[in-house]
Image (cartoon, rainbow, N blue to C red):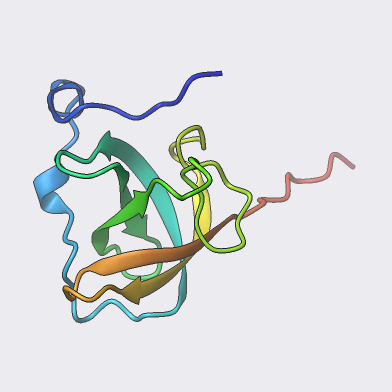
Amino acid sequence: MGGNVLSWKQALEKGFMPLAYDYRLEQVPKEWLDATLDFKIWAKKVLAINGYFSVQETGIRIQLSIYLSKEQTYRVGSSLVDFYRCPLGRTYRIHIGVNGKGNLLLLDIIPVIVASPSSN
């Protein structure tokens, strides 16, 4: 199965608005949050994928970068989520930090499992 990461041009053609997502928000708590993964774009200058998330509690839109690891995967922290292939439009519990440049950084990501209603 291939990935679902777009180029900048493809994202714009599909109607996504990457510039509406911030990567330097002081008001974003550096903790675990539930957020929807809206879309993903290949980074331009580094081996990374930029994930574009909408934080569920606040509606804030943030951009988080996931860098290619030394193991040659797009995984962060202890997560088993392959960010190259993970589904869009799903809710993830994300752990946010800040890198040395003051940009938001994805430290860990876990899919949130939504229970389906029982059919009684």
